[in-house]
Amino acid sequence: MARSSGRSPDMPTAHPGSGGSGHTAPARVSNRVVSVRRGLAKAGVLFAALLWSGHAGGQAAYEPPGGQTAQGLTQPEPPLGTTDTFPPFATTGLGFAGAPATYTGAGVPGTGFGGRTGILPVAPAAPPTRLIGGNPLLPPITPGATAIQAGDDRAPWLLLKPSLGVSVGFDDNPRQIPNRQADAVTFLTPSMIVSVDSPRVQGLLTSSFDFRKYVRATNQDQLSANGAGYAFATIAPEHLYLDGRGSIFQVSPVGGAGFTNPTLGTLIQPQTVLTTSVTPIYRQSFGDLVETDLRYNHSSLSPLGSLSQSGTPGATNTLATTENNQGTLTAALGRGGGVLASRASLSATDIASQSDAASTQVRGVGELSYRITRGIAVTSRGGYENLRYPVAGLAFTGPVLGIGARFDPTAGSVISVNYGRESGTWGPNAAFNIAITPRTTLLGSYTHAINSRQEQILGNLNSSRLDVYGTIVDAETALPLALANPEFGYSQDGVFRTQQARIALQHEFETDSVRLFAFYEKRASLTLGTASDQARGAEIAWFRSMTPRLTGGVNLGYASHISDKTVSLGASLTYSVRPGVDAVLNYQLQDLMSSAIQNPSYIRNILLAGVRASF
Image 1 (cartoon, rainbow, N blue to C red):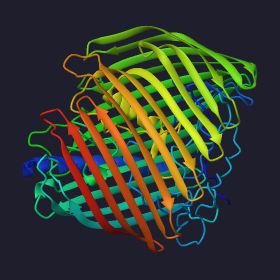
Image 2 (image 1 turned 60 degrees about the vertical axis):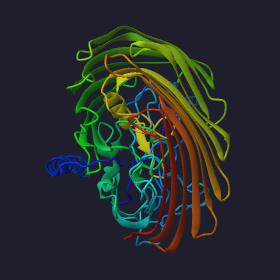
Image 3 (image 1 turned 30 degrees about the vertical axis):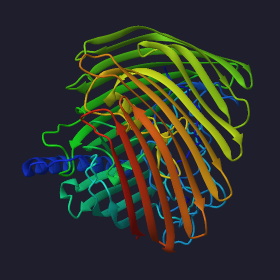
Image 4 (image 1 turned 45 degrees about the vertical axis):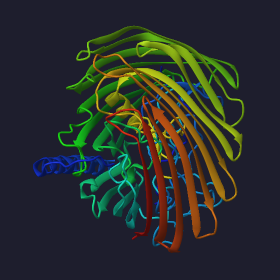
């Protein structure tokens, strides 16, 4: 029997409104290691449960062909990689990662097939159900990542792909201080990719441990864990589904990392954070007129402290433990295929935390759209919200109001804009995905909201997916999505009025890929004792295939926030020695210009040569 990949087209959505210096005591390190092990066990149990038992929140937008309200701004995404490994290029955690346009990968191991062909791989057909790709008025039912073997019935349902990377090299400033003292360094990076594709369960997990060891600067030795996992289970077809996801990553209390590669130890005093999310989804129709979508989401954020001894003595966790419970009921009137379309949603949220992030939120909203022409629709929304942050002493109650429009200038292009009041603040929201040419795409978004840092991180996790290069991106716009922006410092909890703008241009040549990305984010503090901040930055990344075996990439970035400016330059060369074995050469420059006493300026160069083997 042929396997079903569970893949569905993305559908357009509009928005609603490492190493520091110093030593750590052995007992403290032991406690942190125990905490880390517990956190990793929690993530592993969550992912395993989803794989054997079997996301997706969204807001309303407007789709031209046959529907008024729809989800997701992107076209159907190619299957993730269709290869047994991700491209061998470093990711910054903030901007794009990628590969040359001619990247083909190695295919499904042991079978002789798979691999990409041409500029883009061909996406598998969506299963023929009325829900996946069905009613565009309801939030979508799509996995956060597509299995590697999706769309190929000859592939095994389970793929396990371990790999090991070993690099040695030179670091001219391991302590990240003004007076540089060079040292030799060794990097050891074991990693694992797990991909599941069965008729009922689809899942993808990518994870790694990064161990850095110095000859003399032993207080800068560091162990860090990074990874992301997405799983989707169909429990009762067309009625009951389960979405699960999680990520482990590092944040810094001082920020200033910009577009550097965090796995090279560019974060100052790194602290590990584990996030998880589970969402049961229930669908039910009442005749041909009304269809409902009921979701319950449980998300958690757990600070695990530092995995190594490179933290500052006495350093505390940067973010307080937070748990989010949210229930959302959406009722759609009709199928969204006519001139008029409408839907109503009711949501209730409880965020538990021993910090300013604690809140209760209730919101009820009705939405209506009218299609003027096939490519133009006007939208309106109205309702009421009650948002309360008891620890911070804040409350936002009042109407939800909005008016907007959606334009579909060409096939594969969409522009969605609206203005109104939601989340306690007035402002615009916008998103666009414009196919300028078959090889050139312009992406962008602007959002505003009131939230805490933990709330924003959990929201980013639930609105994310993995792209074809294993990079976390926004499910709606395909823009790079840092779960926690590394340019900001995470030493304080608080409630903020946030504004975020992102724009990107990407072009695929015959043998090259070029990506430009810029962002602006402002956080205005609404709580006493918490500082406001704003960050901005831009990056250009270029990837090239020089020969069938030799590929390379270069990225140049600039970012700033408050008193810090960071210039970064990264370069990578990868040579395929044989299938499954690559020789890698990496270089990174990090130039931090700071006027803050607690975070002095420094320049750092890292040069590494190594081998990575997959098994």
